[in-house]
Image (cartoon, rainbow, N blue to C red; front, side):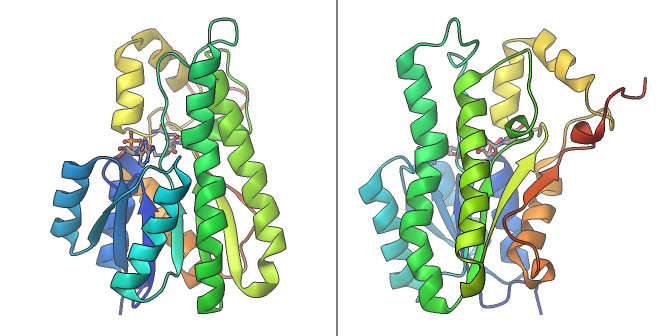
Length: 254
Ligand SMILES: NC(=O)c1ccc[n+]([C@@H]2O[C@H](COP(=O)([O-])OP(=O)(O)OC[C@H]3O[C@@H](n4cnc5c(N)ncnc54)[C@H](O)[C@@H]3O)[C@@H](O)[C@H]2O)c1
């Protein structure tokens, strides 16, 4: 028996990176997985590979999110797990002194409004099942400051963190757990693209990781599996750091 046998999980941003690694892991643990993404071709091919279902969604669009869940219920009959993970980190989101309002708003929409929408329309489905687990992807930057700023990204993740905490408290007695996953830097296309443009920025960040390396997406997927499964049955409203020790460090090893 897998740890997610007979559970239905909706994973946003599942065509790449952390979402993809998690979808793979969930499927191997017996879950029925909905691969939800804007990346149609990659998402579709991947869903077929893992025996799941691809649903095209723009997480910043209200109607699109509503119909994501409607389709999931049509296909699988209900929903137990939401991994609200899709996010962007565009290069024009930088210092507050140079980041324009359009860039600011786009990141807020895709990273924060999306989590609001996914929880607003997803929680009623979990209530119908009598409980469930929600994991919202925040980031270690929600709890620490950086001099190499991405101001809207950081603010969006702070919002995801505090919203998750509040939802975890509000729905605790209904058996719905809500946790904010806070990964440290992870070796995914999102990070690779950002750092390829600015290797100095990558090197500066690496210095602050006690483990001296970025995480692999599979290491984050293991933590998401824990939060999604009954193994974490007494954990809700938490700031769940998976960061190679960054948050605990003052001086890192040479
Ligand atoms: N990689 C890191 O270092 C890191 C660290 C902390 C937190 N995170 C967060 O983890 C999450 C996943 O990041 P990743 O590194 O796997 O990124 P990634 O770029 O590899 O994957 C993101 C996925 O989200 C999808 N997506 C983007 N906009 C979307 C939209 N509007 N609607 C639906 N899907 C959309 C993309 O198509 C892609 O498949 C993000 O929320 C990111 O902010 C990443």
